[in-house]
Length: 165
Length: 151
Image 1 (spheres, each protein chain N blue to C red):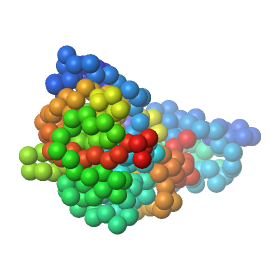
Image 2: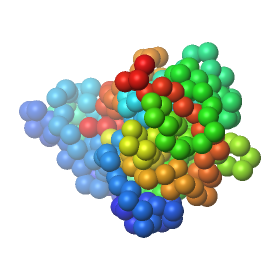
Image 3: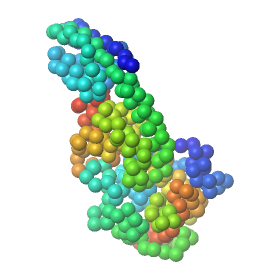
Image 4: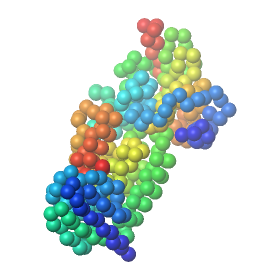
């Protein structure tokens, strides 16, 4: 099972109009044509596949297909994240918080879970630093950062990588 | 969390005069809160991932001796009970039956206790037994130090 979606860029200052794609694609574009390359990279990264495309200066039409499995990813993440929060809310030990089966299953979802984790971190907070570090092999946080500073650094990184708007 | 949710997790609080004393703040945990640090999350297990703190020189074994060593650095010494002693501030370290530490509560000047519940709120509770539960086990070790205004 699959779903076909389309996106159009048009106008002097291109604005991206998507139907059905995650919010990360809805922000205004300021650069052209690098924007197209950037967005296609993001699309590839989270599992969307371009099946038809017409990209010319000031106009682009791309049709994307995403497998049903990827739609399930969002739902699966939500389920696991809610379970993890409910069952670790009183714990003080990071090892017990992070070794919780639901947290480990989220890590098991692989790199495609990174945009979902970043969005969760942005909207609801949470101790996601370990998962982000493991899944991205990145470390955008200064060594002596506090937890709040570390969260800010990861969210900044997420914006730089176009995972977040 | 709601009062009902907390009392469901910690049934001994039901019927006592406990209260939620802060908003949710996941930036610090009970160990940090016990020594008045509300800026850092203290944990021995996380190495190489910035955002977490553990005192330099203290073993990163997540066991009772390591937790006690943290508080010894801050002037606490083992004492017999959580009873009020004039001029002293006390903490209670909770453990499971296998002595694995789970939580720390701090005694307030009026003899009541305060705790940070994981990444969630701080609460004030009348005695250490209020948090005895399958989540935290029970208070196994009490430590004390002279209150700052007594030094």
